[in-house]
Length: 282
Image (cartoon, one colour):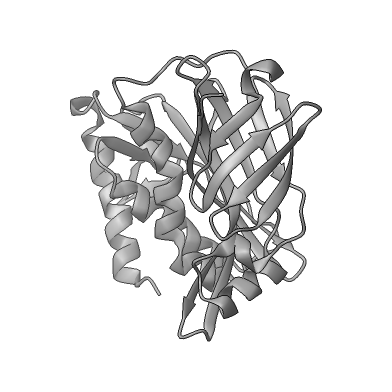
């Protein structure tokens, strides 16, 4: 649980930041919008907002604006100070889904182009709070990637360019992409997964069709893999094409698990991690 001292420290840091904005023009400016959580406990909302500010504030080379220009720190109104225009906006929301709480964090640029989206589904807001550091870190991977000086050019995806064999990502030895929106993944554990795909906005969207199987989650311990086989949502991938039609690179979205002694098991839906498939010679 975050302490009131920590909350005060974050608020004071935001106040100090406002007086130093003009001296830090080289830093990216982020505007974190208030948490949209209709009907939620105000204390829980405040805690989640505070954690987002705290973990974003830990990042280097960024400036975090307060949620509202009329916020007052120590009797000084923020709109009386020299406020820069935000480079990026952070939208956060909390909503119920069945018996779960869903937390979503979206980073967009000033033109409303979505740059990063993280969706976390847990049983309670306490679980969200405990995992907020990881949620923010994964959302921030977009900026770390964008700093790469050698980012390859994105190529146009047409079906004929992607047919054939690809070396898969973690746990997958091979993927065969066929015509008519079908594909198969061959796992290192010896099982196969049927896939479907489509191409939209120059993005290859791949989705699991086969029912879940504990062997999809090898080398997790069998009891944990069986839990995932019951609870996991279909895996999916979002790729763009690079390197003369030889590299599919993007994100893998799947259900992951955290556990301790096979008893304390936390299921996390819509976990996002980087993924690459490399084309094999015919």
